Amino acid sequence: MNIQRNISLKKYNTFGIDVRAGYFTSVSDTAELLAIIKDPAYPERFILGGGSNILLTRDLETLVIHMKIKGITVLQEDENQVLLRAGAGENWHDFVLWTLDRSYGGLENLSLIPGNVGTAPIQNIGAYGVELKDVFESCEAIKISSGKHRIFTHQDCRFGYRDSVFKQEAKGKYIITGVTFRLTKKDHRLHTGYGAIRDLLKERGIETPTVRDVSDAVISIRKSKLPDPAEIGNSGSFFKNPVITVTDYEKLQAVYSEIPAYPISESHTKVPAGWLIEQCGFKGKRYGDAGVHAKQALVLVNYGNASGKDIWKLAEMIRAAVKSKFGISLEPEVNVL
Image (cartoon, rainbow, N blue to C red; front, side):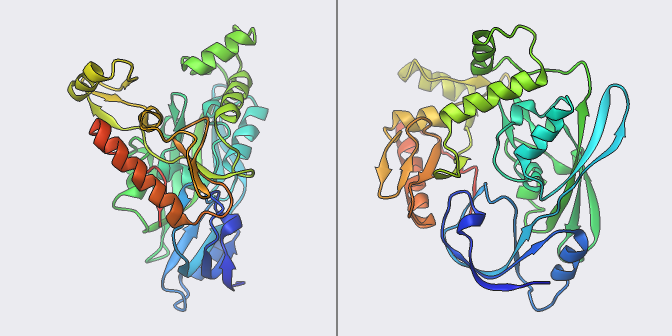
């Protein structure tokens, strides 16, 4: 096992924050992972995947384990469906493209989301009307304290909006090593009702879209609105879209008639956090090298040399302004360390 000391994590997180790991190693299979978590020399560890959903505000004195477990395997299939297992270290978008190359359906709306496969269930990633839970079958994980393997079923994961058991009582207790998905091979259930997708498909003259057509539309939309982490540091959506009661929404609507909402039940509705932030005047604003993206107020960016603390200070300013103006508390979607 190659343990490195005092390693910069700048290239391992999509915000491009230059903090350091006291100790750092990469693991490519479960045997390596088990060996390192059983090593008494490193009692504290931090698991790092694609680095797309974290904001690092300090150096990490613990051992940072970079997950690089790869591999995509067809476990089972018939004429209608296919069961696929992907290693936790597989790049998420590359995995989506792999499924599209084979005309499998289910992940097309989740195209171009940054990060790795192993972190997708933790966050229950979602976009354009689809969430990971819609295609999730199970995941394999290792319990850090004992090294024992466990299979988490769909029910075990207790998925919620950008939430799962891995962000609640199982947080920091397990390391996901692989995820199994159930995808369609025909009669795909396409989700094209999202306005931007519907409009773009119509603009392209596509009346009967394929899974690839939907993916291409999603990629085009995301590229037009969201900055590429390779060009400017960011983690995509920084805040969750808040869910409020219909009663509270109607009170806000009486004051802000144009406030958008997406009903999720008879009693609750979701309000776009980006709209709230934009109304508070933050869209396109820059504070040193920390800023709010000019095309999407939900995205905080690092223009080059911002620290994690700079980004978090801006996030706190935004939260305070939204709370003051609308009475709504924004929750970070990213993990702040």
